[in-house]
Image 1: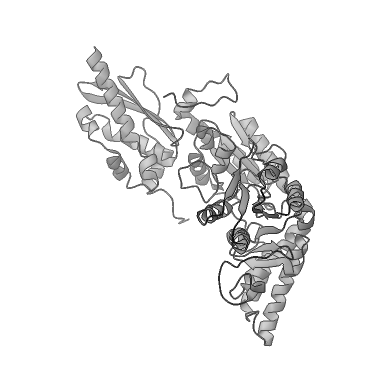
Image 2: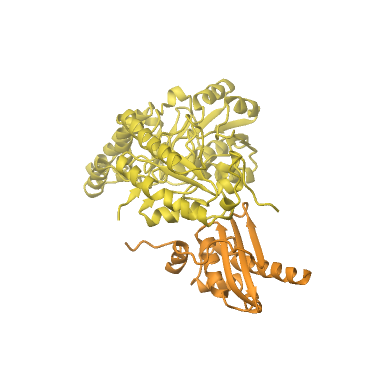
Length: 129
Length: 398
């Protein structure tokens, strides 16, 4: 039909077929960012062994960009070491999606933050034991 | 793919009779209405006939109609025109106006005109008593929309009009959404200024009108020729004006039948959604609302994601108003009504039109439930909901 879209095809593909949606049975780390005032809430759960993210799941309340960024960040870091995962930024996530509309770059681009919170949560649990 | 347009509050498809008349006047009645010759006289005659049609549709006199480029300009002309002509003075409006009124008020505020923004109740209504209490010796104008563009709530304009008359204050109403859905009669409403737009009533875009009651003086927004009784300079948009005239005539002729059809389609949609999808909140007034408007919050999901899902199925609806989608703030209207943020983020406005069919509605009722289900399945707010507390707002815990 040729109508121009707000989001590119890759963003739409992740929105309609999000990867790794859900919750883990016994997560090693949980991260949550956002609030209803901002409009998006993201929750990331990770399973870690030998310093690598073996499994990751997300739950997101938010717009198309929020859901797509959540989805792609799980793909980007699954199997990566937690150090590598910490290097993934919101900017990397937006780039991996081939870009996001300018107004969405800040508020809805929180997936890497949610991931980092999950890793920090994992690390603090490690320090406690 | 089937396409269903349910965004008539944003704009409407042009009526074929209107389109035919616009085309004819573009191609054949091309004179400048200010010209003395026959070509000009033909254009002027067409324009004056349109003026009569618009006037008749709202029970006004033809000389009380000023043609403009649309609702935004009419609202600007009403507010700035009165305020600047008065030179000073206080204005009263509501927190739920269209941005064409709210932002005009903000601009006037910067120029030193004090403005009162009246709060609304949870249905989006102001009361005549609130208006009466806000009027001071300095008040020059009250501007309250006839019905809200987002939630469809109808304001008690006739009662507000009676108060304004008694207190000697001018009243403007933005009737852009109401026209073609409600009876708009400037005499029984007791309004002094009233805004109309062509494209919301199956007319062309880029044309509107401002009703200016005889005797009300306005400063023009622009300087130029003496068109429109020195209130709006510039060669008139004759094809657009003729189209607006026809659209206005059809809107008032077909009003009862149209309003019945709109309400029937809207009710089929809201009833169906409430039956098939749980945790849905209808925003706006339950009965005092425009017949075409259903503004709904699907709890635990965000509005834009619903719109994307609907769009992928060929359905056009909107979240908040078209002017704000793309912005991240929730609707100022829903916030003024006191909705919690997470709920306000989830609002979707469906607005049916004269050509909407029961099959269109049933198609929406088929595709919407699985889309909402899919989005809820990935929403942390849905996973954490407390189903035993209807009406409770689920918010982020620190």
